[in-house]
Picture 1 (cartoon, helix red, strand yellow):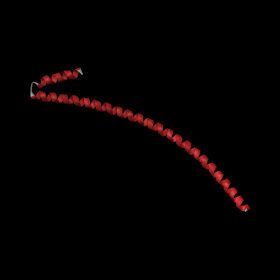
Picture 2: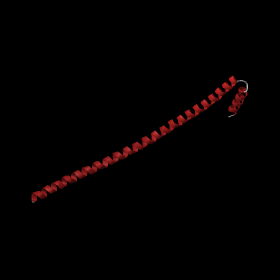
Picture 3: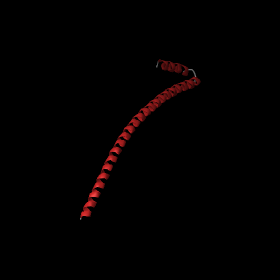
Picture 4: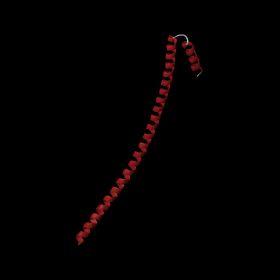
Length: 102
């Protein structure tokens, strides 16, 4: 911050000399602003990349959990379908026997 004050003071003194120095000082101030803005943007970009990586890891973990739950549910459903098929076959056999008796 002290360097910026020194630069600003020097720029102000040089600006009092001529218009050419005023233009040079204006360019210097503009260059300082551009450097500051670029540093801020680069820092922000790096933070966004890190946030994206963290979100991606979290998303992957959630998907893994979802697929594990889905596989578990699919296995349970397969067992239920097998049991229902066996029960249906048994009831079909019983119905055929009853019809044959009648």
